[in-house]
Image 1 (cartoon, rainbow, N blue to C red):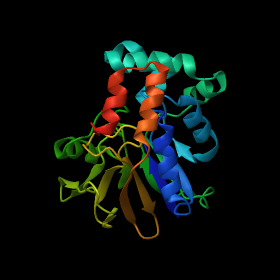
Image 2 (cartoon, rainbow, N blue to C red):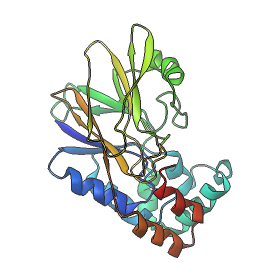
Image 3 (cartoon, one colour):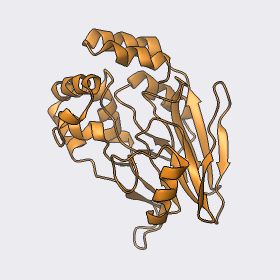
Length: 256
């Protein structure tokens, strides 16, 4: 079983298209870790894609705010403007779909194990302990691992591709591709636990502007950190045309 795992698309259709084009034929199911919308100019195309193509998904904080499940006042001024714009832009059908997205963590089950469910891994938007919590350091991971119910968890929220492994009561970082580097394979050891962040498809913040994602091969127990370039200028032009804050366009070219 092969999975394409994406997170933090943030209504960036060009970035999502590039990921889907690159990975065609390389996965059996798609899983999304939340934040379909927010920041970007194409919330409806992204949500419509998620409605028909994503097998398992959880909500993100921008998803909640965009459909009125949480207050926009918690956001910084730029995120607030984008959230209010998204609220007005989403169609009623897409808004209702986003409103019904489940809260993480959520188990991903083997498709042939319905009578006796087999959990392959779990997914969350932020920390498995708090959907709005960030895991950005080994210290954060070390606090989280003792309470996680699966030995493999995929999470997002920070827009930082990478992850952590837990062995002998110690957490350490798991590497990610450097700029212009080929995909990095991480072979999962049977006696260790992992927290893996695929990074952000639509708004990376790790100084690499390429769309980030992971491929996970269950049979091989191998995670592949991947990146791909996309038409940043086209997305930037859409942001400008929508009247969204300039910063949201500028940061896409910088990856921060």
